[in-house]
Image (cartoon, rainbow, N blue to C red; front, side, top):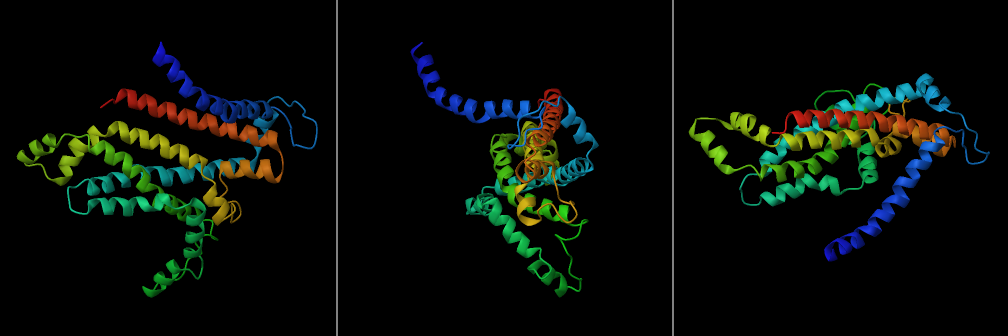
Length: 284
């Protein structure tokens, strides 16, 4: 009883903050999604009109298409690439901690600073096009071309985020018994076979976890788009969250923005539940 009271005492403040700054705003936003609230006029109840409007709005459909496209470019890379990096930095070599820090360093840089840095590098006269010219290629308008803008943004996201997910995989790899690898080597297994038949099955729960976290991050990303492209060119990089920002804080259509945000919440929830079902079927 004594420990229970102290535990609740320590939890009370975080729970209060969570309730005030998360649950109450979420409930308020859900209620507003059924209204035409725009700050300056009285609230008018609209029912499901905002949700019906969203599915008829070409800009919202385009934003969701861009979001899914961005997700399909980012999440597979953030699930797979960090595995290889984690395997490399999991070796028992002198100075390996320095390499871990180098790979993790982009995570420590502010997203806004990262966006401004890569915006300069992707510019028409930027360093990337300069290096392309050295090998005989013409410069590319990375951020002003509707074909290349999302791949460029996805590349920046993967560059900054893979070190973060590398740590998750590294922690998981360090829990794999060395005896399994030693037995595999005695059986004549090479590098790829060892990791395909031992590493991947042993860290499968972590792979699913990273898939969920990276999916949520991809669907919520808008800082890069806001800083680097502002949704352009011609809305080619306008994502669902950026559209929520524009509707809420530029057009002051809080009701419609709240409806879009809850549609996005439902989509993320469905993806998460599907992932959880797959994880339950493949516990190992």
